[in-house]
Length: 373
Image (cartoon, rainbow, N blue to C red; front, side, top):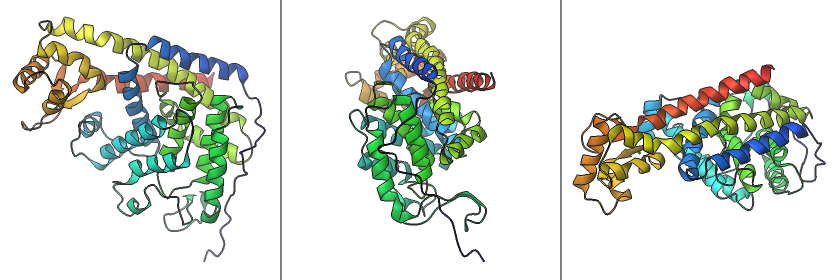
């Protein structure tokens, strides 16, 4: 019988003297992030929403939460879907809440709010009471569900977690640490504290984006760094293990590479977003000012929609005109129905949905090549 468990208690980091690691890589990564926002000028708002959804899918995949693009599309549209698709949408809501609240400071209350958004409707009903709450039980990584025997890592006891989280928040709000280094260390520290019964990985990766937002690296967008981390989860988990042994450099270097890669490949997406509306107009040739014509730019921010949602967006257009506009776009293969039912039917702009897979593939291919160089 297992009579003793040795938990790991990470050191406090609020006043950590942070080593300078890979300064050239960090500088290049910051430059790429800045350049993404320059290229995306004019489509920043729809691009930001797209990249948050992208990040939620990749971050969920690391936790073995996966759904088909069609199922995810229907869930985005507000339709009831399978548990994985609904969890991905919840992850997007959590990322949005944490990053939107982090323009000036990182606050523990906002981290808890984001966790609440992620977990309050979790498929595992036993986890729902813990949504937005710091754990009061011991947890572990690996081993079995019922015992920490042979666990890969046993986080600190619950009594130590509040102080460790307060310390982490202080570190996350420092202004004297290089931003990507700060995000990497804060993320690894968060995962080492493992403050929740579930959802630690997704909230911990959202913290990366929150710190990059606060430090001005990505003032308007969100970088899909989880796609780079998901490209090789064994490698990613080894970075966290190295951090726990006191080696900070690997995760800082890899996050710099992930930021650089995600930003560079997202530039291609930004350029596509800038062209979509004109390409669609060329494809459908709607009359200028018609319902079909006015729907096109809305598709960038609302790539999955019902007619009722479009009516709310285009308030001065009669519902009948909006219906006809959607029919025109469907006839020209710009949107497709993603549900079979007639009432409340959901449609999707397939070019935008296809870009999820395209961008993810580009990031995975590039990061794999760079890590192997």
